[in-house]
Image 1 (cartoon, rainbow, N blue to C red):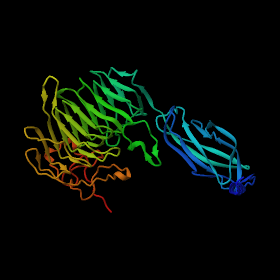
Image 2: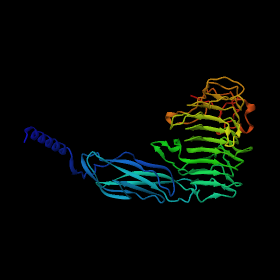
Image 3: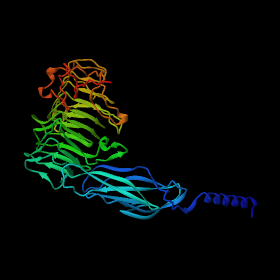
Image 4: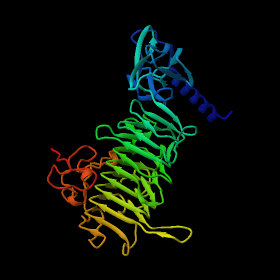
Length: 472
C-alpha cells in the first residue's frame, strides 16, 4: 500500500478520534443543569376562534457540555377556553417525554393555537404555558393569545336580498363573495369590523350605507391578524382579500369613516349613470391595494376628506363620468413593486359602438404626492377637468385647468416608507398648511377623520387632514 495513503488514513482517523473526544456522550443529572429559551413568552395577539393560526417557534438550548434529557415537555393545560398545540421533531402532540439535546446544542419547538368559541363579543385573554421538566426541575414558557368570536358569512350561500343591518357587537368574517341584490340596502353601523378571508369580496348591485364615526370607524381588512415577521403587522400587506365592487344598477351608496386596507382590487364602481350619485365617500381611507385603491367607470362619484393611498397602479382611476373630490389626499409610497403609473388617472371612456363618454372632474383643496407622477399624460385642453387649490409634486404653472395650485410642493407627511410607517397627516412646515380655499370646502367637511377642526388654525389646509402643530 502506498505509504502516503496510509499516512493520510491514520491522520484522518486521529482527527476523527479527536473530534469525538470533544463530545461528552454522558447525560448530566445535576439539578443545576437546566434549559435556556429564546423567549419567555410566545404571544399570538388576536386569534379568531375556531380558526387555526400561523405557527410560532422558539428555541430550547442546552448550555451544558453533557447531553441533557428533558423528561417532559407539555402544555400546562390551565386555560379553560383555548388550545395550544406543540410540534417537536416533526411530531404534533400536547406532551413529549424523554427528549434529548446534545451538549451545547438546541432544538426547535413549534406552537400553534386553536381557540374554541368564547361566547363573548369582545376579545378574551387566553393564557397557558409550556412546562419543561429536566433533572427534576420544572421551567415554564408562557403562552398567550386573545380569542375573538366572529359572525361568519359564506358568500357562496349568503345573498342579501332584503334590507339588512350589521351591528358592532363582534366582527364579521366573510368567505367568498357577499352579494347585495338590486333594490336592497345593507346598513353598517359605526364600529363594525369586516374581516375578509383570502379572495373574499363584496359585490353590491344594491346600496350600502356605512355610517362610521371619528371615534367608531368601520374597518374592512383581511383576516390575518398576526404578524408577517417580528413586530411587522399584516396591516402593511396588500392583496390579502378581494375588494368592494359596485355594479349596475347600484346607486346611493354612502360610506362615512370607513377604513379599507390590504385588498387586491380596491373599490370599483361602475353604475353607467351620471344622473344620480352612485358613491359618496366621507372621511374615509382606501389604503394599500395591489392594483388601484379606487376605480370608476362612467358614474357620478364624490369624495370629501378622504385618503387614497398606496397602490401598485393608479391610486385612483376615473374613466368618464362625474368626479367631485374635495379635501382629499392622494398619495403613493407603495412597498411591493416599482411605480409605473400616475397617482391619478383621468380618462374618457369609449364604448364598442363608438360612443365616447367624456370625464368631468373637479379636484379641490387636495394633495397629490408620492414616488411617481401626479397625473396621467395628456392635454387637458377641451376637457372639463379642473384642479383648484391643489398641491402637486410636479413643477408646473397655473392655467385654465390648474387654478391657484401649489407646484413642486412638499406636504411633509409623517410617512416613513423604510420603517413601514404610512401616516399622511402634515408635519410642521408643510407646504399644504393654510393654502386652501374655504369657499371650495363643503360645510360637512369642517372636521377631518380624526375630529380636528379645519378652521381651528384660522386658515384652511389642503388634503384630508388638518395640520396639528407638533412640539419638539
